[in-house]
Image (cartoon, rainbow, N blue to C red):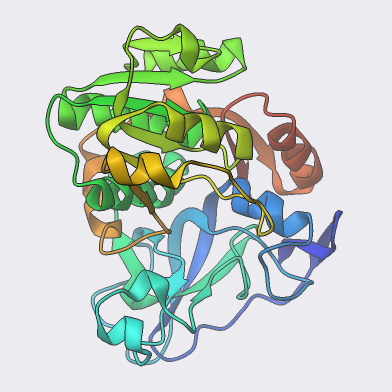
Length: 329
């Protein structure tokens, strides 16, 4: 089969490799679509993945093409998407129910062969069957949607709060859209890219701006950073209203540092928290996707073939467009 291989930092190759065999409890999936996200770019830049080479791709959907020993509840030709995260179930955090913080976690596309290939193997237990009415090519959006669902679980946000989102990329658009639909909230989005701000308006943002200084409120109840950029993070924390909550959603560099006032943290009773990956949210996201909670046409801007993977990554890095997909078939 054909697959994208990140051989070393900065170098993508398209290679012919054997079709993988599903082991016990696993399924072989013929990949219909795979999305590129910031984690994939970090891997290409030599970060995040424990080692290279690796086939990236953790946002994917496809059709079951083979069953490993003992698989029940799935059949060849089922249309599926899959949670890419695999937890040990044995460490203290797993035993405490915090599986997304597993000390021994693995992930498809990070330290296991990913879905930027014609076929990928996934645990059957991680798969969710999709209805025939769902656009299968768009269904790779379920994974980022599941991360957003977990983010709202962490926030435990209340109806009618003012929400401020930094970054109008795909995740910012998903989070802004969910905030409007689920919270009936005032949702403001900040981004330097005017084109992306227009997409934020279409996603339901009540206010958009290149800078939070121009927004019509003095402080937000909830601030979500989707950029991972230190200046945006520091500015976002400064925009919190008393009693507000700041959520770090975007992935910063491992060596990033921020500056803030601990006195303000104390006196204003601020909450600073993070949201990591997927946690008991994947099946809910699949159902929300089937119900039309997000608009694929709003989010997906570009589709490339497997042979065009390097071009797809370059497009993503340029911050042009929105969700970039690769279609292996």
